[in-house]
Amino acid sequence: MPSTKQPTELSSNTIVVNNIHDKDLLLNTLDQYGVAIIPLNNITTQERNEILEKTQFYKTANNIFKKEYQVEEPTMDEKLNPYNYKKRCAGDDNAGFIHEYSTPLHHMVQSNSMVRTTLSNLYDMNENDMKFAPNRIRICRKFKNVANSLHIEGHDIFRLNTTTNKHEIIPGEIATIVGISGIRRFVFWDMNDCDLKPLYDYWCDYGSKNFTLIDPKFMNTHYSGRRKMVNIDCRETPHLIVWRETTPHEIAHSPSVSVFISPIEAYNTKKVKYTTSYQPSIYKGLTYHETDLLGFCYRMGGFEWPSGKKLYQFCHSRAYSFYIHKVRDEYKTKMGKFRMKMVDCGKVDQHSDEYKAKLKERNIIIPEIAFHPNTPKFVQDPLELSDRILRDYGFIQ
Image (spheres, helix red, strand yellow):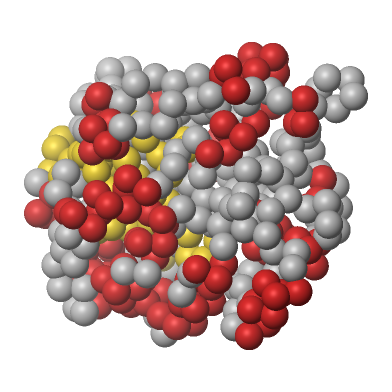
């Protein structure tokens, strides 16, 4: 069977959309390539740098760790030139995921007019009606293509065209990420105008529930020459990258800082019946959406990620044994096992009648448990945020 070939590099200009008001051009680019890039030219380099400098990467980890095991916050050189980003002893460091939510970077991106107009066009809704779920930051240090990470997201991926009697990939939900600094790489397979029957048969055999880890050798046998990549220069200007989740794509590494933003159709009103060791027990009994709101106030995540997977705030449970000796006693059970709780490094006292009155003045709704005397002080003050951001997340109805 043929070996896996390196992807063909496309010029980023091929899939750049500069006119965000041209909805047809945006959708045509997405339909043709499965991915589109929008330079956020209205964010100056200086503004980006100022916000990047304000954003903490290890606030949660450092609250969990003892003083002697504190994680060093990255320098501006590391943030702007991620190739120089040092290794750190923090959860998911190798994968590059930074477990910080509702950061100044997220707010900068989400309140940006170009981002909002683009998403409004893609989702065909008024930008004032958009809803979001909190998500993370990612840091990558070097270029690396991971061929066996190829995946297609979604359950309903194929449909049969009754006119041509051929299978097609259903245009999937739109996913988004913003390259903040460095060079952001995106690797995908261009499946336009090809026979999808082999991929459909493969999906029936191996992927009808979760189409991940698609064999790259299989793809190269049937779809040789269709593996593409684009390198997006974010050194001066952040770029919004949007793609169809049903576009076959890989987890590509490149020296960059990226922010995930997650538009959603509706807030999840399902109630949390139980919590695991990596979720604060205070979440039990709240709705999934309410855990997002409460976590937001601590720059933490809620019960689950927007993808629907259970969210861990610090590290995966498989890594507990590696980190447990570094963890403060406050995050351990009587038996010495890890147990997540709301971080207690906040300085915003939400318990006073005066503070509650200010929230009421602006119609900000926060789960009642936030005001229990034993609930730690807020890290993120909702009163400091715009009504637009608060509406996005559901604090204001």
